[in-house]
Image 1 (cartoon, rainbow, N blue to C red):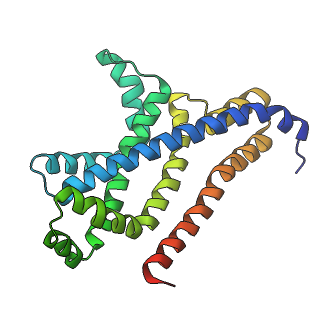
Image 2: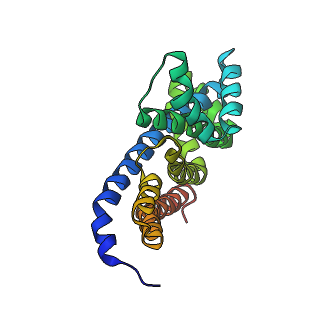
Image 3: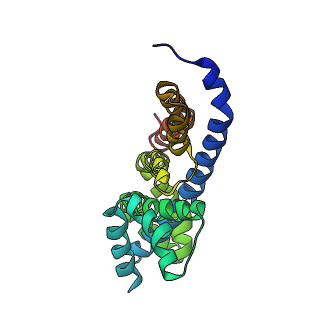
Length: 221
């Protein structure tokens, strides 16, 4: 297979810009997803009336509808209702909406794994609900949910490729555009693969290291 390396070099600025946009949208979406996930899992843990039911509906809706459909609704549907959002904002909202549901499930599993004896001990020494959650439950829940948390982060970064459906110039859209203009399919796909490797490989290695550190801190081996 002969590659046109001069084309690859010339296309680097486009991929650099697309890579940065992909990382930016992905990181913002993941951080907001973590916040949404923690709030949802805590409210479900304390079984807050009405809110728990609303959260359950949200989880079912988010997990059972494709991200592309959610993005279409935000980008093309809302303007019909008089609400216009930028493509990037739609991407962040869509990723957060989807990711929050997955993070909520991950943290919920972590919270449920915390020994009830430790929760009772915290109550016995006079810790309030917020203190109990902050100092006893969440730190342990995080360690238990690291594997699911890491898998969700990688999943959400991969889902940024769906943003091409609303013409955001991330890696996938940039690749499709360059293929349509220059017909350098092999080179463009090669750069797309390299772009996602640059994003996902370091993250995967970091999460593997983090999981081992957490396991070592918990079990001592």
